Image 1 (cartoon, rainbow, N blue to C red):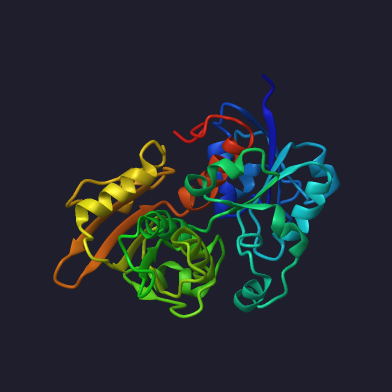
Image 2 (tube, rainbow, N blue to C red):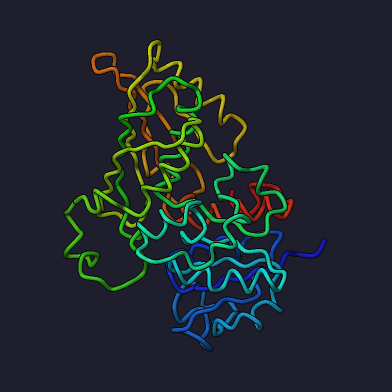
Length: 342
């Protein structure tokens, strides 16, 4: 069986580096090309010295030349720019897995509000499948355009959607407090993210109007079967390289218990290879999931307050971005879902 030819557009950032790490060991793909405006014409080892032995050179992001070399493209680009590549690549018959936010939101008005610009390719939204395999696995099979779920959203939607769908928790008063490693900000030199600024520091940011908030609300509402969910999302930056931990708080409905909540999570995710439901009394820890495509989930019901406290951990670069993108690709192309991710 011939290998699937894949390429990465925008391969010089952290998501691109993680795609390189995983794709270079994937048994069913051939990584044929990678692009970067900054490093065009230079070996991949220039940007990532650990890959000095890799024979690939960065190429300029020319769609026509790139499309000739690939069957499927990963877009590791900033929002707004990804859509500029998605449309012409699809027109060339190339499947697209987009790691940016360009196709995650179904409502163009919501996109304009949170991303401060008109949607760059609204005509493609109806083709895009939301790239959270545990929730949309059947729709991913044979998809041409996939909008990979965001990192914070993945850590919240996976546990939250199962619990809301179970009817054990209320759809109002939802709160999520998330902590992310510094790589979540991207591979750039920017004052808030240099070592002296973020080391020995834990701080919230964008506590109202974070760009991931509408994505989370959209998917939780779908799972709950309600028109909309309004919630608080409070992200924090913490001084680790990678990993996200989210604590999600729900108001429990009558009869909600820790055991019932765990049973609902097991019912949703048993058999899903990249979700680990913890035993009663255990809570998630980022050190158990970094460098993996796993989401770890635990929960406890507080009888005193009537709140269900959910603990979720992922690696923001793997399950929160590039690993999830490869999981989506595997399903799209009829491969074993775990290929290249174990």
